[in-house]
Length: 29
Image (cartoon, rainbow, N blue to C red; front, side, top):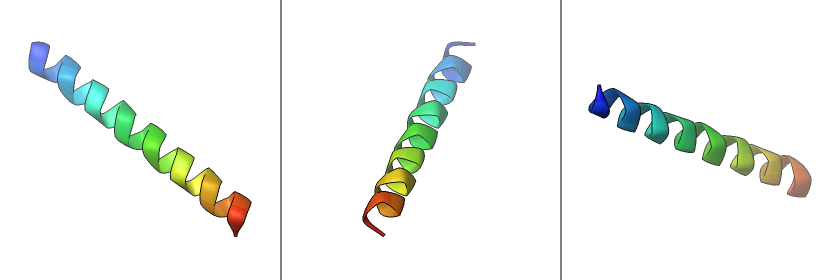
């Protein structure tokens, strides 16, 4: 269960980072 929580946290962090990078690319693009 603990590893699933950690995996979910990592997944959310990656998704947030990708969204932020996409927003920055859209802003400067």
